[in-house]
View 1 (spheres, rainbow, N blue to C red):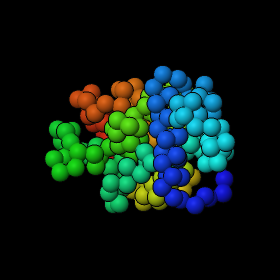
View 2: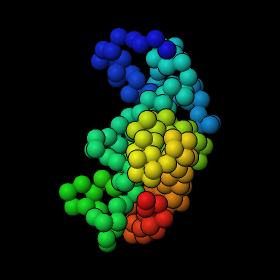
View 3: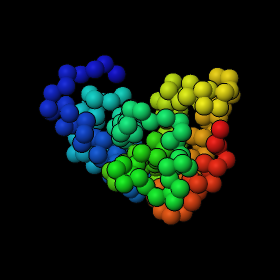
Length: 194
């Protein structure tokens, strides 16, 4: 969709549409949400919706982009921090200065109450994983190649394994940073250490 001039009204309307999607997700699976439902929830017309978005997937992509921007807490975040790092987290409790530094990207985004609902919806897992993969592969695959001394193809497959595995564990544990989560991270870390 062509970029519209970004004025306060446009920003307000787009935020209203995105917030309406998040509200609807609290009681409706993503695959069952319609433009009509978003318009009703937002108290806007379909014409207004289509002025800003071509379809619901565009709204979801923007919401996911916002949620994943939270993962950019540390620009030096490395593959060794995809899971809790064994040397610095012997007890597997969060570091006092930044408790989210060791969290996978999806866990950090899901920790935000506003975006948590995205990660609880069963129908969006594939979409979220695909977005995470595309967003992170350019940085993570070279890191994995260097850390594990593997080819690009092998690094790609290892990254997919780490990403999907981390997502599955987080999902199984309800996206909560609980003692069980830290225990699971300890086991995973012991398996993936180079």
